[in-house]
Image (tube, rainbow, N blue to C red):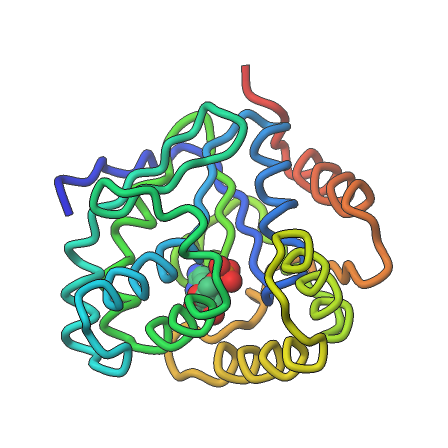
Length: 235
Ligand code: DC
């Protein structure tokens, strides 16, 4: 990794953690847009690490080798257009990291403590003015424990499988709903049982269950809560 920017510790941070399919990716991006804040998709970093390991023929189970890959990750997030383009070693990896195979790979590499440690400073470097919305599993517990606002967004496993099913169908990937539900349950288990930074709400997080809420309803609740904590749109 080339030299990282020092974090701006005065910039407010909103952490949005939760399991996959809870809607946190969509909500985090919308919150960042509304507030004109920077955005960290920490899951993308684990996905990029898994993809980089695959490209280098490195086994996801080889903790030391994968941690070295994570440390040297050459990534760029190009924002500005309609969607963020993510480059790995200079190549567009935006779609490749979203495949089911990388969902599995990222969950495996994310279970290694050395990989998590290798990605820590890169994640912290995203804290810049006017503020940051950080999306992940351990944003409020480990990466930004002093965040001003912490949200834990969840939804039932069945609802999350349905949402993922719809997304994949729209992209033309054929999958079975039952297989997705089994995968989600296995991933939840792995993400919440691992020894380091397991998926769990921070003690001071607001827990939001999105099972029966629309995106707009969740967004409103998050923005109201942020406003109560003194966070309003920048500029
Ligand atoms: O949010 P996502 O589905 O893109 O995350 C991919 C994987 O990375 C997921 O299995 C959990 C893991 N992850 C993590 O362990 N810690 C984070 N802060 C973000 C993601």
